Image 1 (cartoon, rainbow, N blue to C red):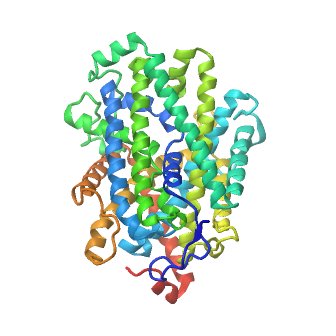
Image 2: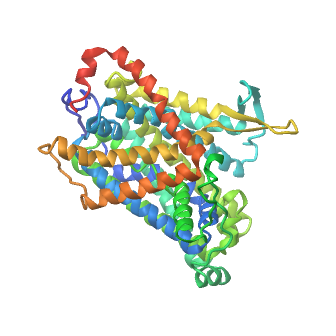
Image 3: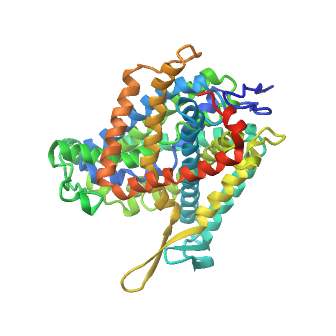
Length: 521
């Protein structure tokens, strides 16, 4: 039988009565793998290949992403072992710095990072289901777009409805207990990992194209078709140059920095197992191991998948894949028309499993914030089944709002086009995600100074060099994004800063006593 999490000291993470410790090492690894693998690996290679301009650049981007992600996971393990409580990164930031920093992370996670990703994955699920069932269309309206001012609208298409139903179903299933949630995760993660392995084997051994291989590997580092990367704001153009990957060292640094947006986002959510630490059987060991094993598995699969693309498709076909669907183009080259349907099935499985993991884990951060008096009080309570049911429901409602809200743009001819609000928001938060990762890893150094005698069942691998590697590399990428994707990076910073007045309001509500007990740091 799974045991019940014992109460924790108020000064470290609040009492957590009722959480069921049912997640083992395999389950935790499946949460990491399942949360990381969504639809990005099947799409972002097109954009990366346009930015880097060479087969070698495409693969090197993923290798760099792998080094960054694995080094971050190995570093996070120390914090996960120190604070094996619900909330993960929210707790780490709170304890290293102050409740404000934890809140800013939790605020951004709830507002956009987790919920926006869940919304995007849900609509992606519906989009690919529409390949098999054309009636699931983005243009078949149940409620046509209704303008909410000049820039926003709300609508309900059949495609949106399917995304909403997916959220409702997975939220409901996760309110039934962590055992059911982890079972769904294990089944779908195993299925999609096998699907990705199948894609790799088909590309490398069955569908390899001699012409594509000669073109790609005989000119492995030759740059062609690289798009110009312009400064991200007009005021920067007088001193920040427009570059391509062929513009020398600076051009390469910028190209690889910008290319990391797609690859890092596709490899994100590896930290989600930390959110569920209160439900892990042996959290001081297995949270860190799950992060390490899961990230290594996913990065290996990602690198091999991109190698498979290069075996099947010449670089120019990767760069110009219709709608950037590189995996679909690869399978279509192998199987013809049925390739699109095969890929659709693989992505349907992948997105379903991905969203289950994201929904399961994300609600635990809202729960931890509420326990500190920094979120709605009801979200800080567990149901009889030992899960934060109210937090799951609040999360689901906000995801549905993000799915229904649309961006509204009117061109010069008066034509109106509609986009997805969550898509715009997600573009903004890549910078914010990196910012919080850097702050969290710096927190390892801070806590070693502040709490040298604290128990550390696991110490960061390669300390201080591996954590420093991540800090320097991620900071460099952030600097590139500020210069060359200024609007989106600045937008992400604004989203984070909008949490300051919200924190002030919550802090006033929770009162002096609550503030004194929320953190020992």
